Image (tube, rainbow, N blue to C red):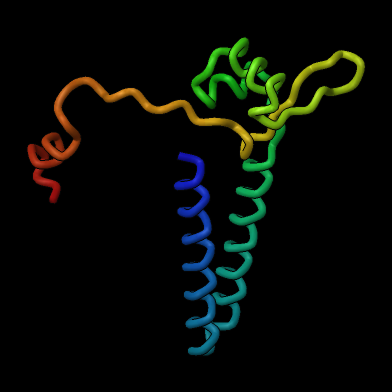
Amino acid sequence: MSARLQAWIEGQVAGFRDRAGLLALYGAIEASASLTQAAEDLEASFRAWWLDELTISTAAVEAGYSPERLRELVAEGRVAGRREGESGVIRVRRCDLPSKPARRPSGPPLNAVAARLGIK
């Protein structure tokens, strides 16, 4: 999921910049500058969120692992983490989190649900 999210954000930023270029080409300089700033803001916000260091308990919830298993993965060197100060609290960057394979949802497949709603 994280790689897909990252690709989506990058696509949005690129789209904003492309549209800003078109606006500038047609003389809408202020609108172009606003859209360029929105692209930069989105990119900076995503970068901060993506690189945020999480506690083991928060990281475990996001990754779908138990805190104990995530601690083991850090100890084994399979997940990057760092100990903080004398307390030894482990922090893991969101971008370094493993993603547990998703379970198959119960119930009808999503394409069947979409068809019932008239979505093609």
